[in-house]
Amino acid sequence: MPSPAAALLQPDRVAESRRNRRVIRLLLAATFVVILNETIMSVALSELMADLGITARAAQWLSTAFMLTMAVVIPVTGFLLQRFNTRPAYTAAMALFSAGTLLAALAPGFEVLLLARIVQACGTAIMMPLLMTTLMTLVPPGERGKTMGNVSIVISVAPAIGPTISGIILNTLSWRWMFWLVLPIAAAMLLIGSRRVDNVTEPRPVPLDVPSVLLSAAGFGGLIYGLSTVGGGAGHDGGPAVPVWAAFGVGAAALAVFVVRQLRLQRHDRALLDLRTFRACTFSIAVGLMTVSMAALFGTIILLPIYLQQALGLEPVQIGLMLLPGGLLMGLLAPAVGRLYDRFGPTVLLVPGTAVVSAVLWFLSTVHEDTPPLLVLAAHLVLSLGLALLFTPLFTAGLGAVRPELYSHGSAIVGTVQQVAGAAGTALFVTVMSAQSAALAAAGQAGTAAVAGGVRAAFLTGAVLSLLAIVGAFFVRKPEEQAAGTGRH
Image (cartoon, rainbow, N blue to C red; front, side, top):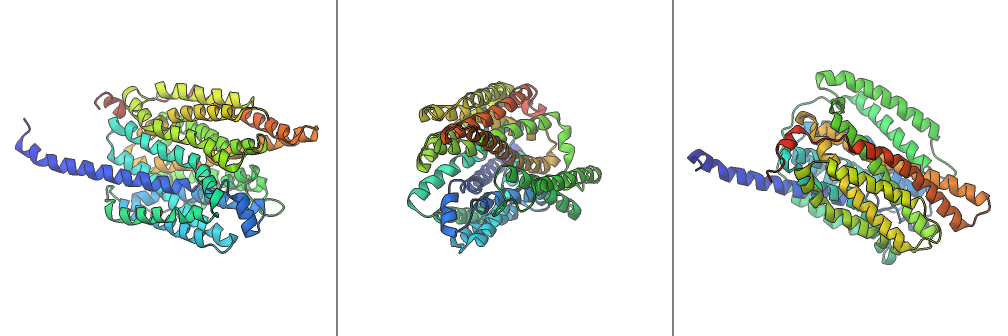
């Protein structure tokens, strides 16, 4: 029988548990809304070109600038989430995103729309690490898999269904409605969250190292810009604004100096991005597997619509609807995958997940201009199944292996890896496809056959890289504190 003191404490614990669940639910909903915008522009480029009178390269900047801003801001969130409490961080993120969405809907021309996307990205960059850090702080180790399954819905489903939603909207409405329809949802999340998101973390006065911020911006920004340019996603008329070699050179040099500076500053707990997180072997391996998984996801998201439209002749709305079931499947499976992680650990999920992803990529390396669309749909569904088995174990085991005082830095690193891997996957797949398609066209093959040949080469490259993920899957271990809680819930 509980003691009188324990009985008095019980209502407080129940109230605290309810508060924690409410905060996480609000953060999940807000994060889904903001991440959705990362890929919502992908099928709107043709309409934007016609409406705003811009070139394809200029239009692609609306996605490239979003990724660039995310890559620059996310590393700074490690500092922001230590320095500021939960509610002001949430309010700032949603206010920036809502303001950017309103500005995009009202934009009179390309320049204002580009600025609006940058403002949106600033809010998005804060929200994702805020969600991850708050979850790791509030959720007991033995229950993190189940809760992280909901995070996987946000991370995997939102980017996957972005093109579907925009395709449906553009079938009947103008591109501005992509923002007008999101705006009231974002504004509602801002108003509700500013009142209902409680302060659940303990801020502390940490210094901001300005040189590290500048080095981070130059390093990650240069890398993302270079990858986007290689993938055909940056620059204006005639070619990229900055040569590819210059972007990679500046990015690599700045990152090298950035790493050296962080290693020195972290001795005194003053690093902008504390790299001691990588001392946890599980975190390092998980980050590597995340890189491969996110590259496969974003590469497939960009490549399949090209193949379906240019090789199989499908309409944008048909393509969007074909990609929707895969995104929904990932969302439906994520909570169950989280519960399986809590009970059995990561290996039983990661090994079959990486094998399935690899098998689908190998299959897609055999498609041609006569492949039935339903077969492509089936392959995308199976790929979504494999990816669903990966994200929850990787996030939960990876961040769970980090010391609690480094959660904000671990979350920032994971968010940065997502952006770099997404850009790298897009660049790799599109570059290989373009080069092979051009070679086949020069050899006299028809347009659709040349495109299909390029797609085969791109997926073959991804399939070879996926073999590394299968090997790494055997080495991800459940952190000891999570393993201690296995089987209790």
